[in-house]
Amino acid sequence: MRLAVLGILTIIFVLCVTGLATVLTLAAIMAGMGDEAAAVVLRYLGLGIGAILLVDVTVLFLYLVFLVATTELFLSRAGDAQKMSSDQAELPESAKEDLPGADWEEVEG
Image (cartoon, rainbow, N blue to C red; front, side):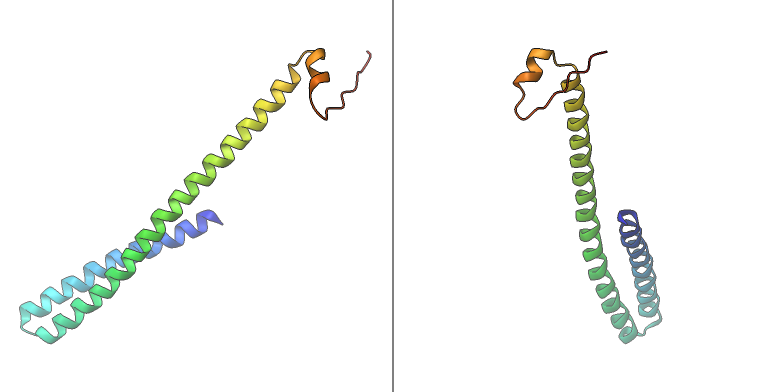
């Protein structure tokens, strides 16, 4: 799910960049041909695409920060859980009795 959202945001980014380049190129061509009205309309269309691009880049950046933060949190919790289980396995018998709420069974073998 996370990669799908990231893919959608990236596709929107690429489409906005290519659309903006196309519209501004057409506006320059129209202005060069002498049709100022069409050039102005295309520039305003480019302004709208640029606004969408700005919002998309902001959301993409914040989503990447969210992904990094949640991944770091997950990895730190997994590391803490692994460390805690290995620490308890290495405790001597006297320390096991001191753990609060610990019900240790002694296995004779």
